[in-house]
Length: 507
Image (cartoon, rainbow, N blue to C red):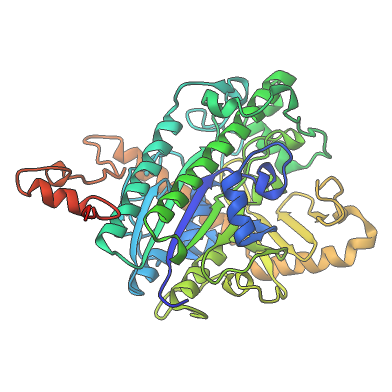
């Protein structure tokens, strides 16, 4: 690459790759993701490191596992002293920008980004703190239940549509401003809320699909304790759903996947029209997936494939046209972006914190995959002990104190219906994974840390609700006096400054 490339990362929320055309779904239409995958590298075994929004995103931002940074759940502090890829890219000379959701919890709502174009869609305080010492208590004010499935359908607008329209609008505008101001290199994250529930779509996206063709999930599966806890937490165990309700929810989800894909197209189009596409690495991913009725489960919060897998497509200068089957994860993106910025192998950041990820840049350039593994941790609601996952080769192993272990051969059993941990023929492999878990984690100490964090956060939140409220929610600065045509500048100056490409004389 002749000059330092820009980086644009487009993130969905709760997008399982299995429900995209780019990953082979026969119905779901994702032409813009398809085009990027055809032009670049598609990672076919990419995972989040925690199947829950805030911990997954904090882990992705820092290149570190949730337990290392205490990003346990959707109300855990994301400490401002932890470097993120935005900090490292700023050190490398990048202009850094965030448009959309990142679910930062705490008073630091930038975490290395020089500017943030929108507010967040979720609260930034400790209100959503779970209580592992009362695992049977349901925080009904904010826990998921099955209303999102029962009430699925169409609407002219929703709070999520309004948020994503704003997110994409401001991102597109800033891309053109980068071109007008010759700002380079820049790194932008465009983070959308779709196709996250509620499963409600605008009619034009709903009408892309014939309702009768919407496939239904396979709800039958051998029971396991964690799934039972999640089902109780989301009230799936006491909710009878009709096939029409399930089909409505999946129909709306498919529609919203296509809506998200249209925003990918909007961003790519802006890069092309502004003359910046050929020198921009575009990355498309998600924070986690959605069970969407498989095994009778909905939303996320487990390490089954539809919950823990994410799409990961990389396209741009220097990227090979390929498919990578090796397991990778979101913590790998920080070192990947550092390699992109360095034009090759950057290694560990100078003066930074230890990283849990490995750069994907060699794989994206077509080099051999080698041996890789993925580590996952779930430390949020519906659990009361750490849930720990190792994906290595064809096998996925899941451990939780007090629960029977789970082992699946994903090559032979992609639906994860056969728990090989009870198979005597796999006893040696199960023992090896169990030994790895014991060596990597002190589960009892980690549980104690999670409970201590929850206790402290509940006390802080209770105090903040008394007296004058000081919100941590981000309020984007905006100076309307410097926008469009004002008396401080000439009309002609605005014409030339705010048009791309610049106006040319007729002669």
